[in-house]
Image 1 (cartoon, rainbow, N blue to C red):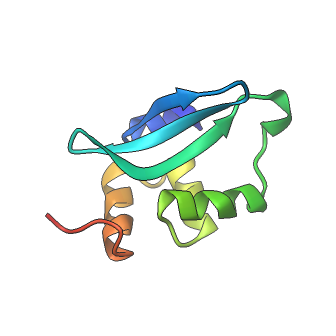
Image 2: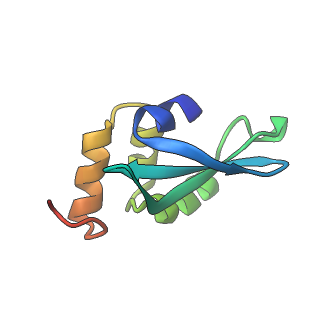
Length: 92
């Protein structure tokens, strides 16, 4: 999951005891889109409840989009397109 986020423009901005926080970087600037990744062994598999929370934080509309982002069918430009369609990012 971490590798997929990093490949799509996310960087680890902060960490705490149990989580790493990844922020989406666009045009060299940190955006408001972020997610946290748990480091504990109890979080090896995420359920739909966690994916629902990630939807809002990542600016996506459906759990399927989060899965596509994390498990690689959705690339960085596809993610940016989703954010533009949702009105979260302005077209350049």
